[in-house]
Amino acid sequence: MTPQTGYDRSRVKIPKLNCNGNNCTELKIPPTLRDPDGYTLNYATHWWDASMIYGSNLAQQKLVRTFRNGKLVVGKKSLNLKRDRKTGLPITSVTNNWWIGLSLMHSIFFAEHNYLADKLSKEYPTWNDEQIFQHVRIIIAAILAKRAVHKR
Image (cartoon, rainbow, N blue to C red; front, top):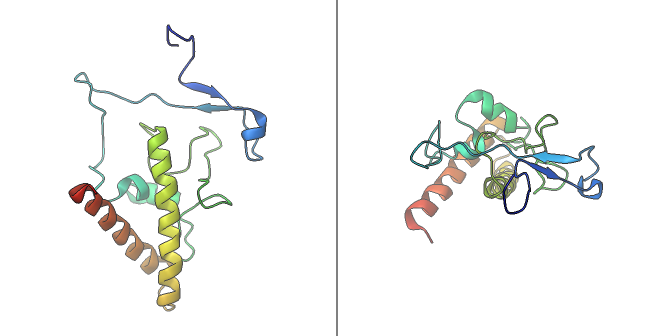
């Protein structure tokens, strides 16, 4: 709870009308872990490999894949990520240190991944799910690296 508002930042009530048909009443937001110097902890990579989207290991990668046409798991609308029934958080490769900006980035890049997967599957109809997925993954990682280097 913050002294100014008495508001508990780790639990946010969601009106029933905003649950998109799911049986939810609350979104639990885990706290961001920090080290003693005040920097956000990162246990995996610097994300140049797009691991914030695809995961840092095969188990995490499997969580976000449909294994059909090289696509990632999304809800009925392309920007609505499916949610974990236990935590209420979007099903992504990153569940520790979740914050709203990361969720927005996931939504954008999951949609972009699936868009590119559709394009590649039409351009290369003989490619299987794995080939499409891995090629799109490289494209997305290159886009992220270019953004990080050029910052425009």
